[in-house]
Image 1 (cartoon, one colour):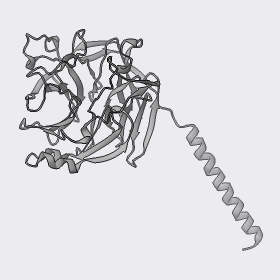
Image 2 (cartoon, one colour):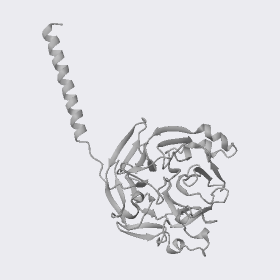
Image 3 (cartoon, rainbow, N blue to C red):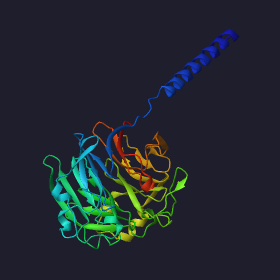
Image 4 (tube, helix red, strand yellow):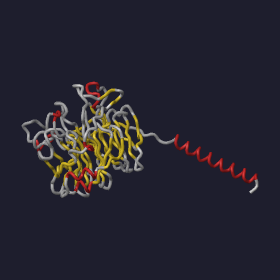
Length: 361
């Protein structure tokens, strides 16, 4: 090859590289930013959000103060919520049967078959679990009727327990629940009603004694102590084969194969060896397994939504100061992700409404 041909080849190669670099840089610059759309506003603290396949939005208000008119509601407009499924079930006082009324609902969740699940921790004001109050309800959204109710026994829910979040596998008919009060997982066979409390002494379900720092201020209890919130956020992958979970005052994401959790004949102690440490993700409250096979995490300290990609990379999806304690997630049929804000760290300093945001990841 002559020197002229060599120079021509090198020049064409350099031109090709420059063009590719230019296109990549242009693509990076024009990448569409994630936009947070406000779809819900409230002057009362809510935690959970659940979206049906037809776009109905459900929320819950935990009874952390005496002023809770109702526990579970459905958004009928951006700023209006009606009691769900009715006002009677949302009425509660000590004289009423705790089995038939919401006491302190912490989580709502819509499963892959479009049933709404309501998790009642029954620990109002964190003053102790009401006997026969902790329960899991399944509601048919075609009729808005309760079709299944499971009351947790004292052997599953202790006086200082706080059932926090739930995920349901309709195919295998199992539910998985976190206990953030004492640190454990509760596994429910929805066919038989058999419940198991597991990983009660394992580090994966316990607080890591982490101090949560938001806007350069540590989140502390009124007495100045550091809150210890155990297993909290939970996510189930699309195949129902892996359960992911994390303590709120912790930075480590764990997972375990659900086949080990479903094996009722196995020894509970043997589960410890099946737990997998996945990643240091930072302080997170809510978790979600997305349609894109990413684990979404609400990053409390940085007002962000993050995700763990299938490649194992933790990346920021969106950062916004309005994400004041992003709490719980739900994903709509169109792929939109919904996230609630509960502003727990602000306590008496709250001067913004509680919000539900929607975004396309």
